[in-house]
Amino acid sequence: MFEVTVDYSFAAGHALRGYKGKCENVHGHNYKICVTVAGERLNSTGLLIDFIDLRAALRELAERLDHRFMNDIPPFDAINPSAENLAKYFSDGIDAQVRPHGVRVASVKVWETDTTSATFIPPAS
Image 1 (cartoon, rainbow, N blue to C red):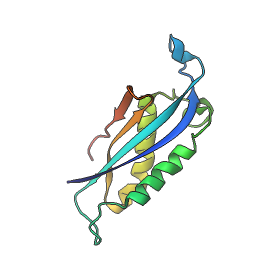
Image 2 (tube, one colour; image 1 turned 90 degrees about the horizontal axis):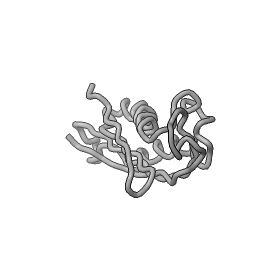
Image 3 (cartoon, helix red, strand yellow; image 1 turned 120 degrees about the horizontal axis):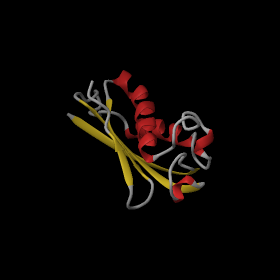
Image 4 (cartoon, rainbow, N blue to C red; image 1 turned 180 degrees about the horizontal axis):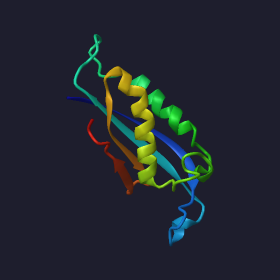
């Protein structure tokens, strides 16, 4: 099994609906997203997936949220834009783009701060 990881950073605001504490108020983070994909076979160039292509897919998803209030953007207009839900959002979006190439998302880690993160590990399929 081979794994490849790329990171991407963006800034966005959010508020956690129904949360009792400071995070129910509008606030922002400088997010760092770490996506790891996995697969069994390398291509003819000896790559699992090109770092450039994987980072472009991650950047495309992140730019939808960058410098925006995430609570106004689907799917976060219906679900809380928590670090956990963000990790699943990025996992689902990246997986749809890499699956046709025989690669799957192994994990997505979303850092809200230097010391707090949430990870989504999709079920093996």
